Image 1 (cartoon, rainbow, N blue to C red):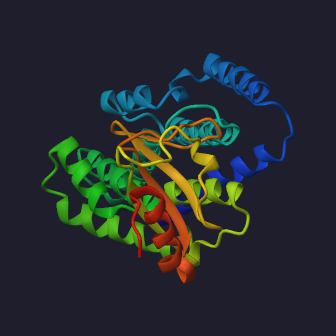
Image 2: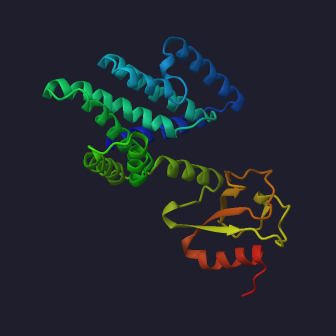
Image 3: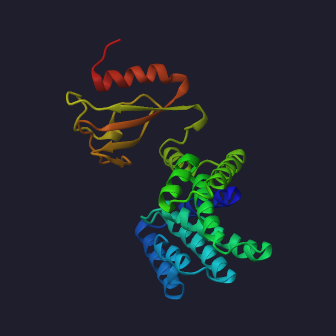
Length: 278
């Protein structure tokens, strides 16, 4: 499961980088994605969407090994293809689905070989779901709690924790970032080519009502270089700032800065937003 998470993250980011090299309009990328997805949907409809239909298939009965492998490969490749193109969609639930299919494949091979009780198949599936989530997103505690609450599993809790921690450790030792960290780092690098994630510090600033920059475009704020606004929390929603986003009161700005100049840059930013004088 640790290697599966590594392959999952690497594949998604590789697909995104390959799509970036194709210099075509975003609308055309969406059209190509729509056509390819539609063709696959005609022949393998279970691979479509977030994967809810695939999970339902496992609940009814465990398909043969060949079908499980086919669905796993098609789901992974289709997800990477769509994600790389920038098509709006989620990658959280598909992580769980792919983990479930790996657990099912493992069960189909191991259960008859060792003569185990077939009901243990569903424990393997749940453990694989948590391990895949921890391996890809790099959140082992969340993975254990989430799957435990979803399933009410108790008899395999020790195995769930052990496998999840191992799956979390392996891609970390291989130097692979969590999928959401990789997406954030790519976004930052695209906006600031000189960014070095090993020498950065993230700070949060809440915009007061009397800030003189309210109404200004966030991209035009006179921030010290190479400080960069990477996200904005507004009314509970996390937004990625673009060239047209206007600064509003109570916005929570997450700004990344170089750790060597953090003390100086933080003072400048606090003076900007809070009218502080040092």
